[in-house]
Length: 574
Ligand code: C2E
Ligand code: MG
Ligand code: MG
Image (tube, rainbow, N blue to C red; front, side, top):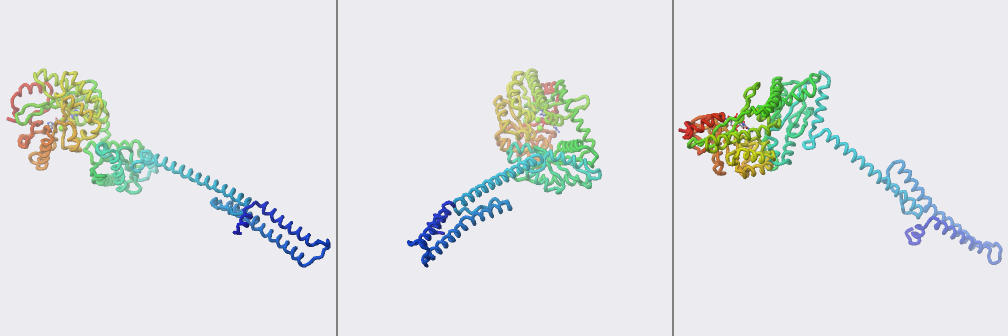
């Protein structure tokens, strides 16, 4: 079969093969008949003739023996393959294509068909996988947070609703709101990638501190929420909250940065059927706000009193808006004095709000509220306008300019129109920029610093001075300090309060003074109350101070009287 002639024969068409065999047989028989007839025309079989016939018959049998393997067997094999494919639904099987042309073509066509079916099967399987992956992704998006892989707000709401709607005998439930402290500063100063990595680490620590049955969700931003079935209610909730705070207070290392990230936690407890989902979440939120307001890094469990305070805040927000519109806020002024001779160098404007119902509200409280509710812009604008108006009036009454320091909030500084607002206000009262100093708290100064850089540069170009308020108390980045156009540091009163008795605080004050000297910045010590503090500050070379030892904040009229009287050294310095 491997001979060239045989291969040639095998690869021809069946018709050719059979016709060839028929021709061979017919030729053989004709030859046989001729031999038998002989030249005499009589049938006189001789051994040679018989042998010839036998030979021809043999050839015919041989021809049939070829037809069977060449035609019938391939066809039957092809049939077997078709049957196997149909039975097993295995489209990877292939028919043998090494037969005569028609059988080969048939097998090839069948194989082609199988290839197509197989390909279609594959693409169908791929489509199905893609579809199920897409469905999984959708489910993931619907219920999971893409940054941390935790459950999301949607899932959280559903879970609380499900658990609260459950059988009344179900265990009491605690909902905890966890809000990271100062996360925005990390995000702003170190970038979003680091911020995300930090969130993942927080997620890992929260999940690692809880049981498998507890639910940990990220609500968005730096807010997380937990649902915990608690057998022991309040006692157990306190223990869990304390454990979470301890886990979150450990330093976090991301790339080259070591960070400390604390959190504030609000806890609310309920039994199934006892209250609705909205009320439970509101309570956890109110408790979290209380934890933040009480100094961060702590937890608070909801109490009814908190609702009273929350509604006070809501009422206060409205009354503050009304007070801004009614122009019923006031500014008090406190001098900053030269520690060598007691001269008043400038005065700081401090906002005062006396409300008929609420009484005198601390600026710390209402300014934080104004920042949260957005009214800080209107409030800040009012302060700036009034301080510039008073600076103009003081200049007229004193016969010399008196620089004014105005506290501003970070949110004002982030407003792209802030530099224009300052320029316009100065122009309205015919003041030059040098008369104005802006005090920004250290923590806020160092956040979002890319955004504020341009605003600060413009203010600087107008001659406006910039001071870092409460220096040493906030989130500190000394490198940013070097790049910012700051002229003065105000040493936080918290350090000044403990000098000279506390060696650590004394060392800090000393270090801040050294830093200011190196960076060629001015310094004002805040909250100077005692002679001992004053003496030490002078000894350490601090140039200026502010505090009750010199003067308390006073009205504009009282200030003008004081300034007119105190041409010489202040009594405290005598
Ligand atoms: P600050 O800017 O650090 O202002 C100094 C605060 O220390 C003032 O409190 C002042 O009355 C108080 N103080 C002054 N001398 C002494 C002292 O010897 N001992 C003690 N214990 N305290 C002293 P105040 O007026 O209650 O203001 C608190 C904070 O509220 C200010 O701290 C400032 O951050 C903010 N604030 C006040 N007015 C404004 C404003 O117009 N805008 C903004 N954004 N913040 C303001
Ligand atoms: Mg200040
Ligand atoms: Mg201060």
